[in-house]
Image (cartoon, rainbow, N blue to C red; front, side, top):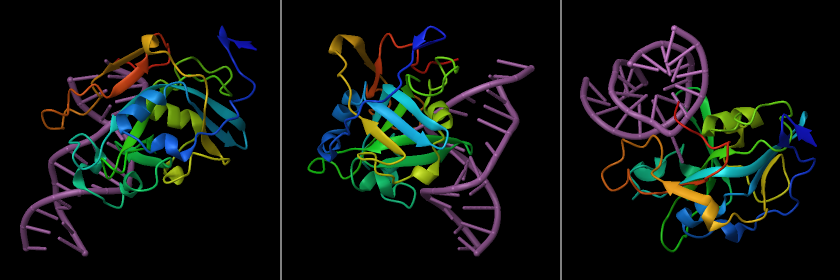
Length: 205
DNA sequence: CGAATGATACCCT
DNA sequence: GGGTATCATTCGG
């Protein structure tokens, strides 16, 4: 099927991600989540697509991470079971979704912010950029804090689905966005990953 | 460039 | 307990 020049799939990939996928270094998980599908099921049907941009956030040691203040009511999911969602509200109006991921032997918390995805499923008629930003994709998929703590590794109304890996040659990395408040040494870490040629990656206006 | 918009963390009493 | 600065963003002017 072709909509507005873009290939639109009828079905998402059928394979879930194992819990172990998320039980390793957060930066590795951020890189490996590129290409993985985020899929949403609502009364309106299925929507989602492959992730094209991510950012890694560490535990209390990471000056850019929400976990930098330690475990609080809001950040509790970041310290909990990997493979679950950490959804927070920012600027009073935008929801952002992370996947909890960290190597428990090296860090006590961590998560990967999903910054953009390719709107391949559902969202028919929508333009290519409706999911080109962390708050835009949650709005497009109907994700709110109601999904905070939600398990993303199995059948439900929101999950991650494995797909073909993305070649190293097609991936770029650079500093995380919007973390100027973090101390020196944390601002410039290249912990943001994106698919270089994707038209769905977020960009500064 | 700056407003929108409200939960949160952290300070003080 | 209460006041307030801050914010992993987005959009219009």
